[in-house]
Image 1 (cartoon, helix red, strand yellow):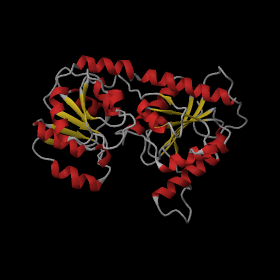
Image 2 (image 1 turned 30 degrees about the vertical axis):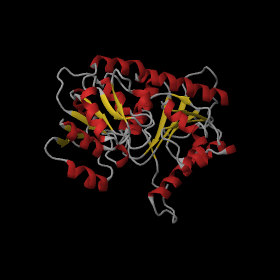
Image 3 (image 1 turned 45 degrees about the horizontal axis):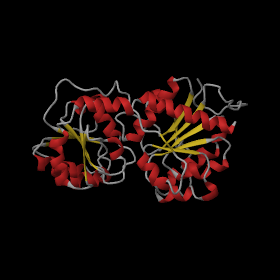
Image 4 (image 1 turned 180 degrees about the vertical axis):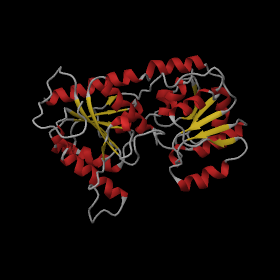
Length: 364
């Protein structure tokens, strides 16, 4: 199956014909490999391999060092940032996407599956021939909003939750909602449940791990933390001083180790300090049968029902501490059932496959 080089004399997509030739864009700050830097890397890994397993010819453009089985085309390549104006990672990223988009039509894709979080691909969507589906993985931000204004907006759009679709409605009024999905076989309930809470995710201020620690201490429950310390200054100022008896940092875990830790926890704490567009950690926790106590911000209310967890006002540490006891009493069977109903990976792939086929067919 072709994955890397531009196609010569490629034939256009014909409606109803399979497989599709799909070019997948992701952001290029981190390699797509385990342990994943965040939810987008996990999503990119899973949709690339999932669509490929369904017979589609999928080419991923990603940062060098991504998992070997993805067979990713490195972005930027060795020449992408050799320019005298490149003085920062921001400019380097701009030039890398610009160079990729200038040659993207040469690959002969039926459709581009854009998960880059970057303004350059959407800015150039109206200048290329290949149709593009852009997934809005974040709330609106200036560069992306500006790129989508007026006649420059081209292609189709989807996002991860109804809450995030509402945030984008003024800019992208026609936006499909496709919730993230997970491999339910990899996130399973455990037979033995501990007495501790677990927080996991990227250790950055937006994720609020320091507030989870404060809430756990106030509730008198042991807390384990797992995740990558992406922001060293934040970790040194807000996390390291809070570690000690009752709070343990486990490091950046591979998926199997993280799933085992999560399944054995009495409760998972989710503490977004921004409008979380989805919250993959919630789906993973509930799939393991672990109830969730969370700040009610972004898409949390779309994911967490009264049967599987508790929502409290944003940044309210005292309320979160009180919610821990309530949440840990929720039915672990109900948690697993909600994950099976809403976030099965095959359901997500069905939806993306249908939408990608529609986008490609309308451009044929």
